[in-house]
Length: 195
Length: 195
DNA sequence: TCAGAACGGCACGGCACGTGCCGTACTGCG
DNA sequence: CGCAGTACGGCACGTGCCGTGCCGTTCTGA
Image (cartoon, rainbow over all chains, first blue to last red; front, side):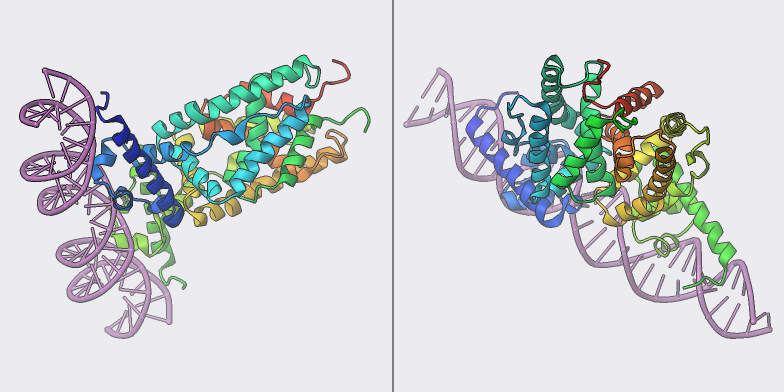
């Protein structure tokens, strides 16, 4: 169904998502209600339910409507340097309120709501994964990464430790931590010949 | 406050936790209600609220009252073999209904409820981490792991990729995946001399 | 046998859910 | 310019669950 008043509708959609993010910051996602979003946005509940089937879907759209710029790889020619800068940017973003708590809530919601999990993967995780794999493929061709390294595992092995700290141990995300993880991953666990 | 009727109270506590797990399997954690647990357990709501401050706390206790045995390292003398067996056990457990969905829900709840996050860490993650670090320390002393490898990162780097797959991409947890991750981690990403 | 704690039953006010109805404001077409 | 058609706001409703209060009952150990 195509809207006949596209600008008007689009404006309202944006206002609603902004209200959602504002309230999520103030009260936390868990206490967020559609009623409160409607009131803050100056909109009736119908207008929200007409656009999103659930609180989770609304929140997913609201949060993904933010980012965009920060996530591309610089082109220094050195994988490790590129990688480090990219992960620095991600970690800095998560450390900048209110992104950390909001993203944490989104991932939490994805554990209960399969539609949110699917949307998160398709619209954020997958594109990010594709970029990372492409960058590693180039690095492999340039001899900067072991040729036998399984590219399908890149995202898991690189991001996994970050998500673990972010979601499980819930300790602060620092650049120092990024450095230590990268160092460990590139070196590997096996006793080196030079040891 | 120490209960005067310990056995009676303990019995009811167990019945409530069993009802919680049963209902969580049937309806999913998101739709779980205290009222339904009370009804299933044949107990009044007071009796539940007297023991747990929130649905999350109840669920945490219920789930952690299950495990126990599966989680220790075998003593084969080879770190990699020990590790593989231990992670196999964890992955098998998550693949056995209803553990996967229940644990996923618990971690999801931990993203919204700091008390649940703290309890999960103290009572499950931290002990598990200590065991893993101890096993790696022994391996390091035996020269099976690089001496310069940062032991504080062991849990993050080993478990991170597993949690990433479990929570983010939400693909099946298989032994093959475990093998590939372990292989990559021990080898490292740097181009090997033998390449 | 008795005191005291824990309990079940019942009820309550409060809140947010999701939906229905109706009158109104807006837009593009004839 | 007037007329669809659509999206909207306001209001209201029934429902489900929340967390708590009261009161009478059951169980336990001294």
